[in-house]
Image (cartoon, rainbow, N blue to C red):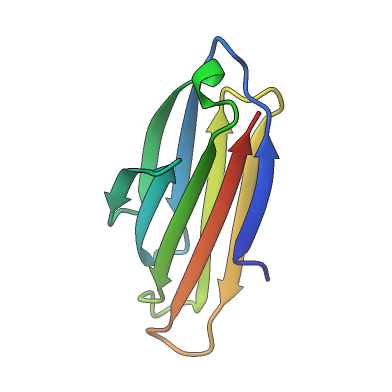
Length: 116
């Protein structure tokens, strides 16, 4: 299962672009988000919503999301991170998953989005 993705995302010039990131399966995680060189989020939450700005201001920029997920849920060894964008031409939602071998293991998820 992939834990790294690189995607191109076409955004609408006049619309606000929003990222919703969700750590699933009752697990714990920390996420850092960079827009270009700027750190715009560094949170330990299972759900993060970020307003990124108007699409016209995001074109030719890169968004990088790095999430460390620790398996703390004793009922499952599944981990996941879901990414959902509003403000793109096509609805975009993608979920990455990985099952760890043992309780307490950590999975590193990375996602890069290039806006155009």
